[in-house]
Length: 492
Image 1 (cartoon, rainbow, N blue to C red):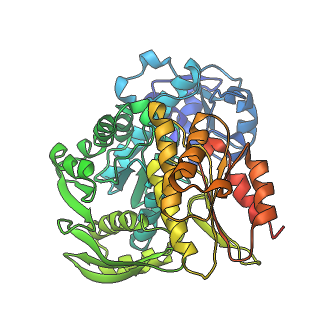
Image 2: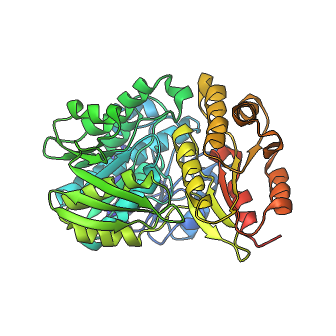
């Protein structure tokens, strides 16, 4: 974070000083990182006292200061130098507070954090910082990682780890930027209309990327039209001097061109795209190769990430880099070196016995599940007698469409000629996935339901053969990431 005194921070968040005199607050400088985990506090940092489901950050405030924190951002006095923030009702409505699983005290700290991040972002943008915002129903994290990779040759980049994209992770990432940061890449998620607008208000992007409109969180939004309206909040936040990068292959995203005063750059494989991928091919591990075509020139691209769906993600990253001054060849080189940067997202590893495990267990929705199954089918076709295993858990937050969507995925596995489907979990959605597979192809014993990850692991250890390829995919709540890691622990 940029250096600010405790007094300056208190003023920015409308907070009151506690256990520190005004004179000392004016001298004491916060020059380290902002942290909500007391174990991560750095000397001169700022500790966020956030109440949570299992613990209250206020209880760790003293330890954070002893570890070097200059002050604590809190909802009540904690016996060490602190900035006490007012209730949420007293915070400006533009502070950007979203829904979060915290009590009123936690919401107040989050609101103050948003105000602090907004003030820092404003100062850094005035100094030349470029902010890039990314949203979409699927692929946000992978694209954010690719954008960061293609921008690093151009300057210093700050981007969030993993899917740190909500009302806590977003301002936390903003506050990672300093005067030396050239590019700030922000991933933005939403569960309700207005969420992305609130995040964008904290750090307004000059470049916005919208990937797709799918069915993720359909149970929360109710319809794809509402999802599209919410994703479009990002392009509405871009000033007329900025750029909106839109997926030309998704009609709902392409239509967002009407919702922004910014210049629009369309990416995709369709002829109407400004930046295109042509002659797309996949290698034996489903890594795409294509010719990048743009007004700046062409370049051959060989991606290091897996799945044809990554082509659109890479094109969006390429468009950002080209807007920031990169050449097509620079983009191609950077994309070719950019492997998976966030855990449990199409991580591909091959064991000593030749079994390939695809760990894509961080998240799942119907669109990403389809992409994962398609990549699995390509990998399985790369070797003679190579069997494909789809180990699938529940796709969460689909609402009334959950049973139908799980049924469709089961049927799709059959149509893609996946060798074995292992449905992990109980309940109506998982029953629907198994039943859909059986009804589509009369698989019989080739589709198996198991109660949990332990049962799935036992089945796989007993039946996997050298050369098999296994996709492990589900929403994070299903906890299948540990299953994939256990499979990679060695041949059993």
